Each structure stands twice: as C-alpha cells, then as structure tokens.
Image (cartoon, rainbow, N blue to C red; front, side, top):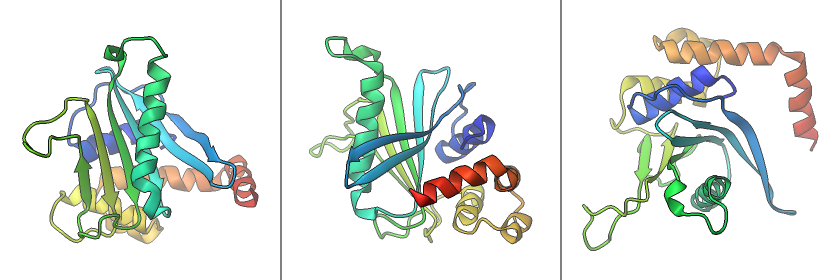
Length: 197
C-alpha cells in the first residue's frame, strides 16, 4: 500500500468504481489504544479528487475486535477533519476497508459491505456517507469477480508461484512491488525492528 498507484488500483477493484487522481497515501498510521493493548496499524489512508477518504488495512488477527477497530478508524478520520465547534458538513465520504486472512462473519463471503440503515425500513439509509468493507481470503461464494478472487488468493499466498499462475496485471504489479520491498535492506531493518518491538 506504500505505492500510491497500486493502492489506487486496489481500491478501484474492490469498490468497482473509477477513482479520480488519488493523493499520496499516509502509510502505517499508528495509534496507541491502550498501553497493554498494542498498536493499531492503518496501512494506507488516501484522499481523492471527489473528497472521499479511503482507509485500507491488512488484518491477520484480532478477529473479535475488528468491528470496534473499524469504528475507531472512522473516529480518527473524522477528528482529523473537523475540530470541536466546527460544522459537520466538512466531513467527507469515507470507506474503511479491511483485507482479512479470515472470515470475520463465517458466511463464506469474499466481501461484506456495511452502511447505516434504518432497521424498520432497510431501504432507508442514514446518509452519513460511511461504508465499512471487510474482504476475506477465505471466501467461497461467487460474490466477487475473478480479479478480486485472484487478488485475495495472492494475499493469502504471496509467493512467486501464485504470482506466476495469475493473469491479473494488478497481482503481478503488487508482486513486483513486494519483491522490491523484500530486497530493500532499509525495509528489512525496519521490519526486524518491528518484530523485536
């Protein structure tokens, strides 16, 4: 996600929309929740020309706390835009996206999309322009296209063999970037420091 172009392409594929030029991502935004609770890592947060914010996180664990983590990310996004006393009309459309190596809801979907709706009239949305999306590498249903399935398969198994088998240009671009990062000595040192922490 440190590559703006790749992040941009991943978002377009997940949301199935055209995103006008995206600004550089803020990568690895880290926020302490509590001293004994560890850190939350937000892999990328980008803005586009339509005044939309996309927050993308990779998730391998913490299954039980993920819905609350999503809420926490949304609060951070909004508090960065509006200060106390300012009008809430400044708030932007936002998407909180988690790419998970587990099925959070155990329904074998590749994608679960949430927005605020009225329980009495499900067709009535709140209109707060907040969407929360959870992707799962463990999905089995035919709920996404082949390109998303290839992307999720690569997330699950990020190997040379997996990248060679796919016909997806996006997966090939991601694998190229992953390979470059693995060969970067500075990145290796940062990774080792993170593991020690």
